[in-house]
Image 1 (cartoon, rainbow, N blue to C red):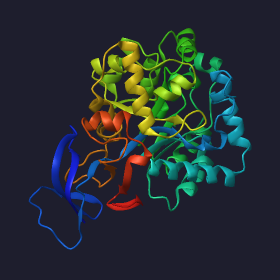
Image 2 (cartoon, rainbow, N blue to C red; image 1 turned 90 degrees about the horizontal axis):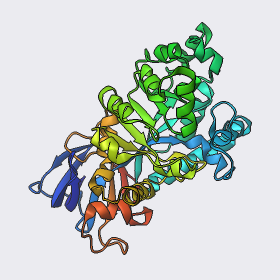
Image 3 (cartoon, rainbow, N blue to C red; image 1 turned 180 degrees about the vertical axis):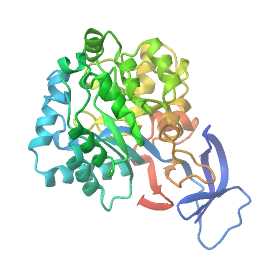
Image 4 (cartoon, rainbow, N blue to C red; image 1 turned 90 degrees about the vertical axis):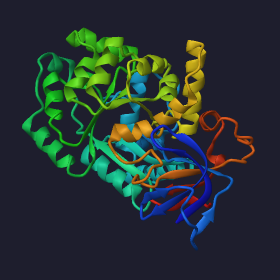
Length: 394
């Protein structure tokens, strides 16, 4: 397939190329050049802007069954991994129902230009299998990070107890069927357990410093910050970091591939906004996620728009919108160490076809600002994953 006369955001700096041709072969971008000769399968894309497929770097799609329940409850009573309302709903909902709503959420993400998502999957091995059943036949890329349902008490953490051989074997079995580990947080795990988990050879990620309460709890129990303890996991990336200190961010910058922020979810829980400007100053690689479907819609256009404007409101100065767009594309590809999130030769051909003349975008004065705070599902002409059009038409 050859896309003729198309505008693109090219490469790792999302450079705007006003007019070029793109050759897609198999599941990758083969060649990008205005000198590509036409062929019978060439498609004229004169009024299209091609952007990298959006990557939702943190989700909990199992929560799709519980949209907007418990809005006025406390954070812990809603999402605590041990006794939260969410956990009760997940345990008590029939598997067929969970699968049905996870499928709907996955289909919704594709329509919104999301070509890949990273899911923290509760429910142990059964939870992983449910996600795989839900995603069967849906062309979106998924990275499933599982966990064993073993949470340690404050007393066990103080005594620094390891996980038992039984749970260690359960973990090894779980990892055969998923892409890595998604740990609930350091406040549910001893230092010894986190070090055991760090031996996992697949992806490792952990929630960190999401709430004031979790931040304070770690300090009171262990005299260490959540981030200091979370880094014992040797994680590839950290989630949230809403209450991370400057020193925490410095450590994260040096010792991980990046941070995934979830600003709308944090705001929905009345837990503040991550300090993205400080994270950027510390040279952290930043990606973005929509988090729990229970409290937030899986829409990265809305996520980028909210983050851009709320940070302006707080800091009284603008962040370059291109940096926000990179969080949902290029940076996420780096975070996951995969050839996605970038329109470049040799990368997987995941992309979103944006209508340049859509009523909300025309005239397209600044493509980065337009995508970040004006684009929506309605601006999309088509979505391509692995070289195939999976939604809409060109």
